[in-house]
Amino acid sequence: MTFHHRAVPIVLMAILIDSIGFGIVMPVLPNLIVELSGVTLATAAEIGVGMLASYAAAQFFAGPVVGSLGDSIGRRPVILFSMVAFSIDYALMAIAPTVAWLFLGRVVAGLAGAVYSPANAVLADVTPPDKRGQVYSLMGAAFGGGFILGPAIGGLLADFGPRAPFIAAAVLAGINAVWIIFALPETMTPDRRRPFKWKQAHIVGAFRPLVSESGAARWLILAAFCWQFAHMVYPATWAFWAEIALDWDPKMIGYSLTASGVAMVLVQALITGRAISRFGEENTVVIGMIAAGLVFASFAFTRQGWLVFLLIIPSAFQGFVQPSINALVSRSVDASHQGAVQGGMQSLAAIAAILAPLILGYALAIGTRNGFSGGNFVVAATLAITALIIVLFRVRGKLLRPPVA
View 1 (tube, rainbow, N blue to C red):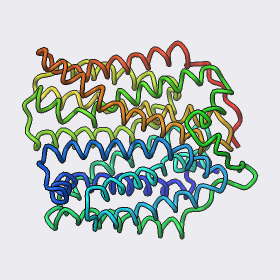
View 2 (view 1 turned 45 degrees about the vertical axis):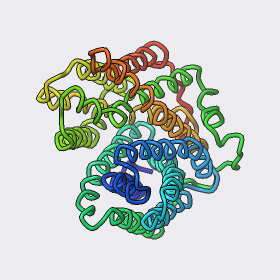
View 3 (view 1 turned 135 degrees about the horizontal axis):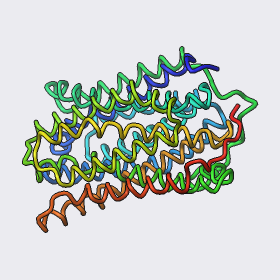
C-alpha cells in the first residue's frame, strides 16, 4: 500500500463535498427558520445555535459507533451509507414544513457526518505510518476548502430561494455516493476485522485500545481535547468578537473568514505534510500549538482591523496540530481499531463543539461588560498553552508504536 493509493482522492473528495454540503446551507438557514416559524431574526439565530448543538450531540454518539462498524464490516459500506443518508436528509430538509423538521434534519446530518471516523481510518489503512501526518493534512485542506466554497455557493444559490442550497447539497451528496459505489475500494481486509461490540462503541470504549498501549496516550487525549476546545473560538465567537472589538459589519467578517480559510487550506495542502516529514508529528504539534497560543493572545488585545489580517498568516500554522494528532493516534493502535479510535476523536470534537459556544461566548460577554473584549481569546490561549505543556512534558517521546499492518 502506498501514499498514492486510489482510495485517497476519493475519500478526500467525500470530505470536501460533505463540508461543502454543510456550509452551503448556512447562509440561508436563518431566513428559512424565519420563514417557517415567523420569529424574528434574532430568535432565529438562537434556534440556529440549538441546531448546531444538536448536530454536534449526534456526532458525539455516532462517531464511535460508525468507526467501530467500519472496523467490523468494512469502511466502504459505512462511508456509502453516510453519503446516501446525507443526500436523503438534505432533500427532505429542502421540503421541510416546520422548524422541528429542520432540527430532525440536523440530527440526521450529524449522524451521517460521523463519516470522518471511517474516512480517517481509510487513510490509515492505505498509508504507511510515517506518511499519515502528510495525508491527514490533505484531509484538513479538503475540509477547509469545503467550508470556503460552501457558504460562497450557498450565497449565490440563495437568489433562487432559501431551499435551493439544500437541493444542491442533496445532489452533491448523491453524486458522491454514486462515485463511491463505482470507485472506492474496500481498504479494511477481512483478516483485520473484528466483531462489532456495543461496549466499545462509545467514547470510553473507543479509546480503550489506545490508553492500554501507553500511559502517555491518556495525556494525548487530554491535550487533543484542550486543543479542539481552544480552536472552537473561531466558529463559536469570531463574528461576535469582530463586531464588538473591531466594529466590523457582516461583509468585513466574511472577508476575514475567507482570508483565514484560504490561508489555512494553503498551509494544510502545501506546508503541513512537509513539516511533519521533516520534524515528526510530536514536534509539529508543538510548533502548531505555540503558533496558536501566540495568535490567540494577540487577538485578545487586537483592536485594529489591519492587524487581524496580518495575524491570519501565522494563525494558519495552527493547521499543523490536528493532522499531527490524528497521525499520533493512528500510529498508537493496531489496524483493527483504527475506526473506533478515530470515532473517539470525533466524539471529543463534538463535546468541544457543544461546550465551546457556551463557555467562550460567556467569556466574551463577561469581558466586554468589564471593558475588555478579548475574554474569549484569553480562554482559548490558556487552553492552547495547557495542551502544549501536556504534549511537551507528558506525551513527546513517550508514545508506544505498535505495528500497524
